[in-house]
Each structure stands twice: as structure tokens, then as C-alpha cells.
Length: 196
Image (tube, rainbow, N blue to C red):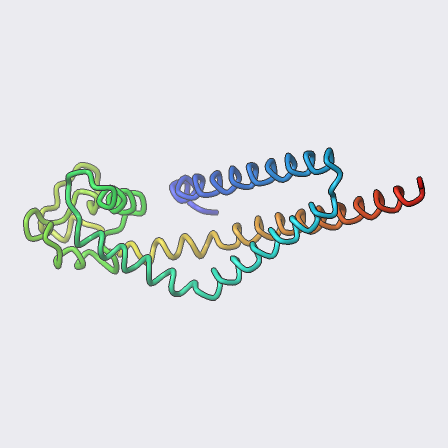
């Protein structure tokens, strides 16, 4: 079982996925009710099929280009370190939040800070500290040794099972919805011909 701090780190991610899925489901229920009132279930089935295919393509593209996504994250994180300052820049805030939450320092390790302007002026940032409230300046013994890139990628890869499971569940419900919409469309069409 994961440590309590680890669970607290992943809880916002899972909550975000739940919220997105809830909103997503709500939108499709509303769309279904509107299309039922209008009586165009066949077009609704085609609409659901189109959305399903777009999601399938997005998932395949994400899987194929996952290494490029990792490289992009690493390059952006390195750029954020080089441009780090204490003026409240959103990139600097993100770096501080990642380093504080994951208890890491730099991209690959704490030595990445030595190539930055911030380090030459002030030393390591406080977000690199092993303990609360320390001021590390240039003392490498007071900062976390492990880099943030490896920790972020480990967390993302460990949560991929949850993401895949949620995605598979949504895909199953979509396929069931497509099938039922198609069946309803056929039933309505057959009943119209019987009435005449």
C-alpha cells in the first residue's frame, strides 16, 4: 500500500478524472434526451460513433508519441529552471510546488541548479530543502538529491493503469450507448412503416 503522502499526491489527479468523466457523461445524457425529443436517434448513434473514433485516435496518438511528451516535459522543466526567479512567475511557482511536493531538486538531480542564474546569485531555492524552513544557499547536504523528472514520470506511469481502466470503462459505456441508440433508431423506423 502506498504511503499516506503518496496517496495525498495522487488524490487530486483521480478527483480531476472523476470530475471530467462526470461532466462528460452528463453532456451525453443531455444530448441524448434532446435528440430523443427531436426523434433523430440514428444521427445520435453516428454522433456517438464519431466521438468514439476521435477519442480512439487521440489515445493511439498519445501512446505513439509518449516519448515525445516525456522529452517535451523535460525540456520545459529545464527551461523553467533556467528562468527561475522568486517574483511569483507561474513557472517558478510550478517548480517550487513540484520540488516541495515530491521532495526532489532539479531535473535529473540537485546539480542542475548550478547551471542557473538563480544559483549563482542566491544558491539553491528553499523548495529543494530536505527539512521545513531551512535555507540551503549553496549547501548540497541540505537539499534533496533526487531529480524531479524521474519522480514525475514514475507517478505518471504508476497512474496509467487507473487512467487506462477509466478510459476502458468510458469506452464500454459509449459502445453500449451507440448500440442502444442504433437499436432504438431501427425500432422507431420499423414502427413508422407499420403505422402507414
